[in-house]
Image (cartoon, rainbow, N blue to C red):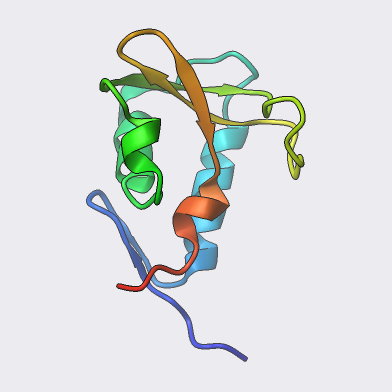
Length: 107
C-alpha cells in the first residue's frame, strides 16, 4: 500500500489525495449542468486551480468565477460534468480535479 500524500491548498488541507478528490467531486455533484459555482466553493476551486501546471493559461486575464458544465467535445470523458473557469473576459476553459491533485515535485 502506498504512502498517503497530503495535499495542502491555500484554503484547506487533505490528509490524502483521495480525500481531496472526494471533496471536490462532491462539490461538483452539488451543481447542475450550467450552474455558476457559489462564492465559498469558488474560493476552494481557485486554490485548487493554483496546483494546475497550466494555471497561467487557465486563469489568463483573471477569473470571474467557475461553473459546472459538460466536458469539452473530443476529450476523453471520465465524467458527464466538469468544472470550467469563467475568465474575466467571458471566455471559459475546463479543468480537471484529478489533474490538479496529481503528485507535484513539491508534494
